Image (cartoon, rainbow, N blue to C red):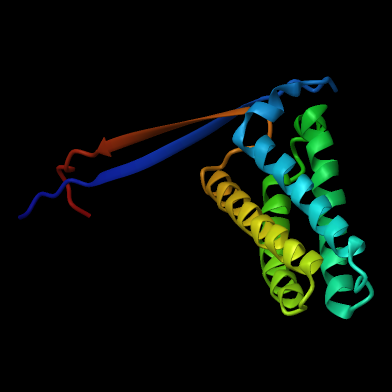
Length: 180
C-alpha cells in the first residue's frame, strides 16, 4: 500500500483602507507627478484652444473638433484637479476614480492624436501651434493613462492609503492509517 500526504496552499489577502473623510485644502497635489500632469494637461488644453480661436480659420471643421476636445479635456481635468486639491476624491473613495480617469485618459490620448493630426493639415501658424499643443497633450494624457493603469493593476485607490497584506498558509496533512 502506498501512503500519500496532501498539501494545501491557501493565500489570504486582507486590505485596509485609511482615508480622511474631511474636505480640506491641500496644495501638495501640485508637487506630485499626477498633480503636475493634470496641471500640464489643463494648460495645454487651454493653449490649444486659444491657438485655434486666435486664428482667422477658427470655424473650420478640424478647428471646431480640436476645440471641442480641448474644452472637454480642460473642464474634466480641471474639475478633477479641484477634486484632488480639496480631497473630494478621498472623501468619496468608493467611486472608482482610477478607472474613470483611466478610461478618460485613454480616450483623450486617442482624441488628441486625431485632433492634432487634423489641425496640422491646415497651413496656418495658429493651427501649427495648436497641433504642437495637441501632440504634447496627447503625450501627457498617454503618460497619465499609463500611471492610472499601473495604479489600477496594483489595486491602489486614487487618494488616501490602502495597505494590502498577503499571507500564504501551507497545510500538510499526514497520511491516514486507513486509506479511503
